Image (cartoon, rainbow, N blue to C red):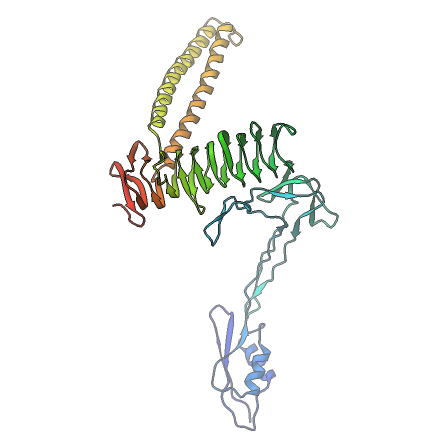
Length: 462
């Protein structure tokens, strides 16, 4: 007796086929060869799942669809990539601990390597795996792309062609598969009269104190493990002061980047970025970004504090009524500076237009007379003045852009106080100010309907 013909259902994309085999008597048995021939009759050439056919036979799975053939999607190869053996995402902000304190000791602004240290391993691309459907029509996979050799300075590639090692010690950075190792000035002791002032083209790490009267300047970052006294610190790309500042009214801290410090006492601080600290005491502090007093104390007592983007603190002022000013946003002087620059630019542009008109007239007259005019002293004087005015206008435009960026950055700036604000505190938002006469708890000061509004934290105005 011949076996009944199974039915086969194939998906429209020819990526899967299902078979249903009719029931047969106990003495009869299908064979894998027979079922495979049925699939071939249905134009299924590859992808047959022989083990599924065998299971249908052994377990006598009748009158039920079973997957018996399957295609494969192409699997693209992976591109080559570099595995970096150093930290590439450094946290430049302090870490809040469970006990409410802030860890300033482990802020890391730079990653250091030693000569001979492995810094990267290259993983070559992988080949892709082609896909196919049941009709043996193949889908070509993409092959992984090769990367060029690692670019940068301060390292070398070993003979295996994939391992890279530092050839010098210093600060290592990575951006867009370009690695550079820069010089670092590291001092295992104090900056004092024996060491002299430090001025370095790169990053500076000081494992001691910076004593009174000394100066540390760097085009990169400056990290001080212990205390800064009445000294001058200028780290263009950032400053970390793990031991804080005991200024005695003589400390000056400057940076175009961000600054983190355990505390500032009697210090003069100007930063274009953000400031993170545990406390300010009788200091003058300015930040072009935000100021966050987020430690266990988190307080500002005395002095003047200003941040363009906003201030967050636990406490402002103290119980004895210390005069403390905290301001955010834009001072009216900024708008005055903008008006002055715009007026000066208009004057320069009018003068420049007159010079350009004079140059055109000069050249027209000289051509009419058939004379050479390129080296004429009168023309050269006009050209020189044109260059000067153009440079001056460009400079003023840059300053104007900077001031307008400050205004944009100050939008929605506020003073947030998590715990309390005490009498004696003065809060300013843009040109508006309010004198705190009674202790306030958990409040936010911000501009509302043209004046300073004071809101319980969690309440949104409007």
